Length: 125
Image 1 (cartoon, helix red, strand yellow):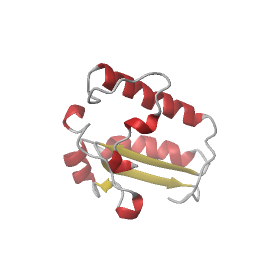
Image 2 (cartoon, helix red, strand yellow; image 1 turned 135 degrees about the vertical axis):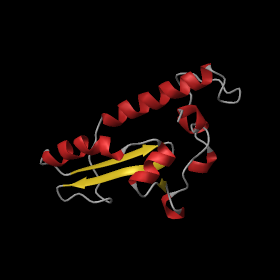
Image 3 (tube, rainbow, N blue to C red; image 1 turned 45 degrees about the vertical axis):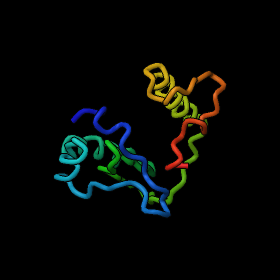
């Protein structure tokens, strides 16, 4: 399964409208997302052993394939991530710049001061 087969094909609806698609089983995760859940088990064990409240969500090709909650955390738990969000933003902008360079943004020019919301598909706003 190649990322290019899926990269432009799915934007999840808002959570109030159903949210992400969920693979639901190891067989479906492998079939739909090419993810072997057995291969993730060492990461799950390591995460559970940290002793900290944590949540892990793994999405591949538009499907939730794994979700773990450790040490009393819940899906609704909010975490203070402080400046870690800068890393996520920088990664997203890097992907956007590359997509623009390859002509995947329908002729839109991307500059360092371009507002991100101009490039977010309407389906996920």
